Length: 83
Picture 1: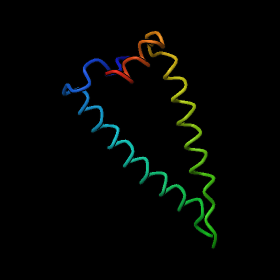
Picture 2: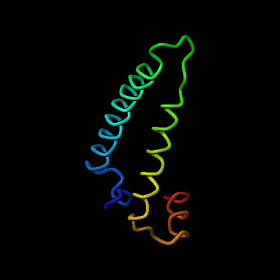
Picture 3: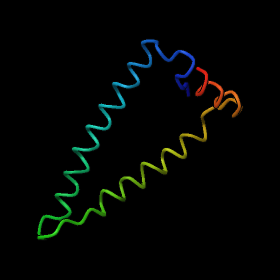
Picture 4: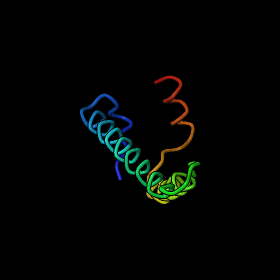
């Protein structure tokens, strides 16, 4: 897996931001629809469906992060502070 870091201002970074925004928008619509379907016959809204989807996405994120190659911590902190 390739994480865009050193080529921050390349065209790849814009594409990555584009697809993150598209994914966020689609997930918001889909999870909202799931919440509506789960609360079809109730007066009060129960958002546990949204929390469960968030938990699944968080677990998937942790699994994905296991495959990312990370440089040493000093270099990352140095890059964040001093560019």
